[in-house]
Picture 1 (cartoon, rainbow, N blue to C red):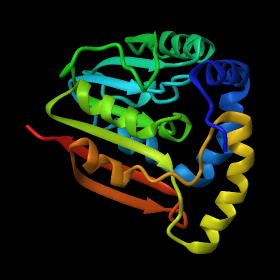
Picture 2 (picture 1 turned 135 degrees about the vertical axis):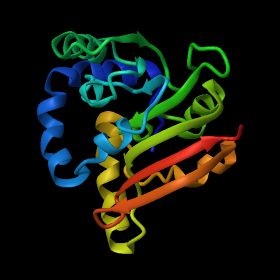
Picture 3 (picture 1 turned 90 degrees about the vertical axis):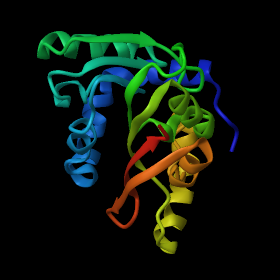
Length: 207
């Protein structure tokens, strides 16, 4: 499959932004359960959300966190800013590429990414950037759809992935877990559900 670069992804997600919340609603009800709450409820201190999208996580963070969100799509960010204003959630929302985060080393206490690594061309590079901007002892919290450990489910994902990559640059069969150790993270918790296609991860940067 041809890799999709940042310019193509930006245009694609700008076009998808107006219908994103409607399109993802069924998927979230069927598969994610309380996944967003699980991730956001553990965030603390200076928090960076990578691929903040339309801001669906914004109301779920503890009120005391200091939140920064980045996304590649300006149209997604416009919707996130509207949601922040409507919910009273203070947040700094900035256009940025997950593969090249515009922050100094050791800036954040927590990095969050939900349903984001599946759409980044170089997910290993994005995880390395998340590690870089975390302070020693900081935590990475992830929620995503991943390649199933069940053979027949994985085979179906591989077929469907041909369509999702072509349309949105969205990969269905990635497995971020092995990449965390390679980036220097210590995995604290890893949970799979829904026939192995939904994964929650909590990891820590060595202090």
